[in-house]
Length: 321
Image (tube, rainbow, N blue to C red):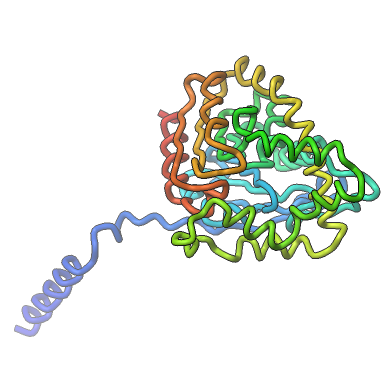
């Protein structure tokens, strides 16, 4: 009799757990740990975040201004259960080394040199490029240098067309490049200050009633790397160099037409800096690209990481079928 009772109790306990435990528990896939590493590139330390199985296809995440790889802190765990994800800080940004800008000025060519060296050190021969903002000029240079290594591109508010820049924004970059007077330099320095970064970058495109979704860790992290005049000067020099990216737009567009990279364009349509027509313009040169304009601003990865991840995962998986 005791054996019968014990078996009955065990059956009831098993039944209770089966009924009370949601079905999704058995299907839940927890993300792998993200690692925080440093590689030596050209004698300088390049910090990067890495997660996922390195035997799976690699996605290289290229951050924007004024951010770092911290920008991808929510996206990485959403992608890494399925893919190998690598997110570096540019030379002069974040936890990477900040060589003195007074010794060697910072340009996007210099950032691309460092990123190419970084990819070489990690032995990444084939990868998908995910580009945000400054990540566009860096990524397009990498594509120019060795297009065969780029398996696909994911563009998130990274411009390559004049249609993506309002006349005011075009004028800003032209003035930043041409006007090196004290007043002109101060005009650019203003973009690296706290008020500009918080209110004219992160919160600019977000309605007040939705701002509670914006994590203040984002701009706090950025501003932590912009506490000295030398660190601010690095970003100022890059803003002064940005006109050289605009001048290269026609060459980059020709490269896209020639190579027809598989492409996903996920763009925050509320971006008032890099406006939505810049996203739609990609379809001229990449007619088979997948385009999604989502209800977010320039920092769409801060507002809608799960939505962006869903598009990225569907895009990546469609290429594996």
